[in-house]
Length: 127
Image 1: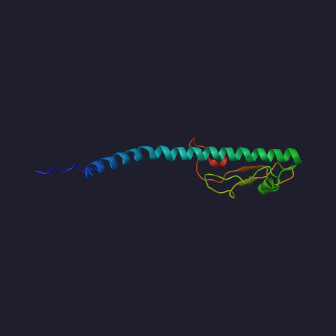
Image 2: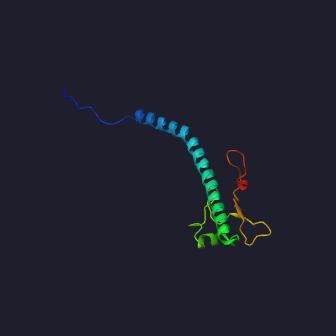
């Protein structure tokens, strides 16, 4: 009898077991990944609001008036670019609040127009 060299490779059952393990690991890790993406978006939104509000305050301190638009902050180099609302994924959807009535300008504050709430239960529009 002639002996054959052993075959190399995996059987179908071995491949199915590996695929089942990979699918189980993905099913366990995907919800955690989605939640971490949501947390990151919230943090970016808060930071973008803080940075833009700081730029508005600096503009007012320098010029004794509020900016006429968010674009003026970019033109005058208080911001490099308009901040992105990471929830809506747009830099054009900010809700602009006017300054106090006795002050010149159009942009006193900004808020997000994103629907929904943070993971803490606060509305995005209230940040």
